[in-house]
Length: 246
Image (cartoon, rainbow, N blue to C red; front, side, top):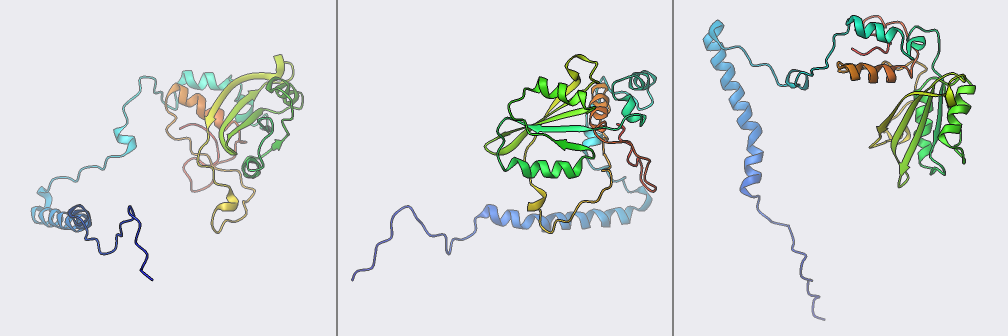
């Protein structure tokens, strides 16, 4: 029997010689190492006359200054924050209580993300969406002293958005007082899919809100920080648990 002929369009890559580009890429680490050694030798030979090493480029030192950037101790900002809707939470007069729901008819995959959120946020409670409107859910939440509402959206059984609203007391119209923000969610990996994952502790997460330096940034950072109860600073850390923009 004659051997079967190979079909066209399936060229074999075995024995293919590396291109000049691949060789050049492979030599880059060696060239960088030689250049670094040469600079160190020159600096050692010059001694104190050696030029100072250039500071590395980072996001912080290359970021363009914003006209709306404010200082953390700005008196006007501190006065506004002392009287805003989040002041009772940051003064520990009110504990945050979060109502979590989803879009109508959520997929089963979304509940893995919901389970992680319930372990992450203190005082978070899930309620099925059913056929209720967001307006009705806001009224329901404010009547039961919830401070925030989170609504998860999804596409193709993957969470792609998170709507967060601050709720007012039941005396306010419909309980929805604002502010309201929508955050895009991407690359969600449930904790069950993380290799060698462990159980979460009951510690309140420490928030890193550095970089919220503009007036709008202070507002957004304070909004996110209001989802957690303020805690005393942890010894040995710069800012501790207190969720304040820096």
